[in-house]
Length: 114
Image 1 (cartoon, rainbow, N blue to C red):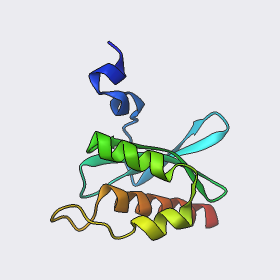
Image 2 (spheres, helix red, strand yellow):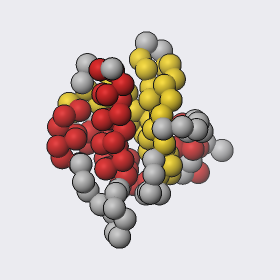
Image 3 (tube, rainbow, N blue to C red):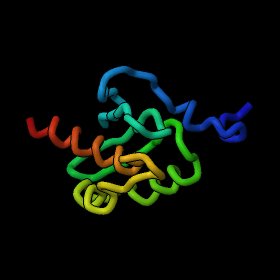
């Protein structure tokens, strides 16, 4: 059965790793996996190259909304993503999947600088 038909596209793309984030290589680009905290999505995979966010994939969470967020931030400068999404909460939670994406980007930017 095709994963997209079963609604398991994000599961097919998931890589289950422990720790805050892990880098894995996908062709010539470095894919980062960030383990979230306090939200439904368990991980966020993304690439950050030359300050541009690409290939965002949320593993878990609200599929339609998170797919839309992934499309909307594709090719956007990291600083703009941070400015627009930082501090957004979900229900009674102190964070959200989009806020976790900001945390992931900030961690990756810090790693690349240091």
